[in-house]
Picture 1 (cartoon, rainbow, N blue to C red):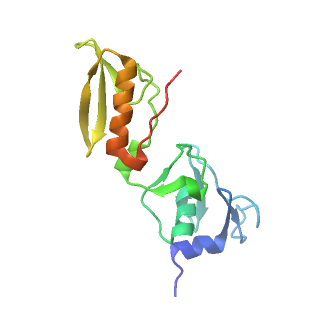
Picture 2 (tube, one colour; picture 1 turned 30 degrees about the vertical axis):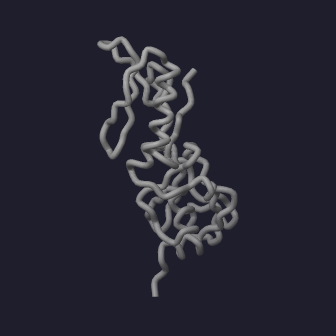
Picture 3 (cartoon, one colour; picture 1 turned 45 degrees about the vertical axis):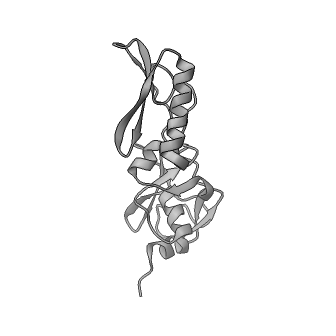
Length: 168
């Protein structure tokens, strides 16, 4: 009988406070039992770990260890991709994971879902609803546009709504 992936991870690793630690000594690349498993990926901002020549994102390993299955996508509730505490991880899909993104760095308004409509000479609020852009109106007042964007995200994105804060 072969182990499930969750069983394998629970055999190899111990979870503690958002990190996983080796419970076994698998090969020369591992420092040893009790050492933190994985490393920060060079090309990505996630931690990764290699098991039996397969690389896994650490947050997915932790989710699998606790829930018994390997998800396609896991969302970091607080947006910090290195905060792998189980209470900060939830199942997501591409759409809901995108809802939890913060304000983009190139935002002219500094407010998520609010941009300047040059032709109208007003602020426009646009969010994603059912995988399509939804316009919520044009506003002369930036604070009103921000309020409308916040309400729209809460209504359409539910628990995955990330209000993004303001860029300085």
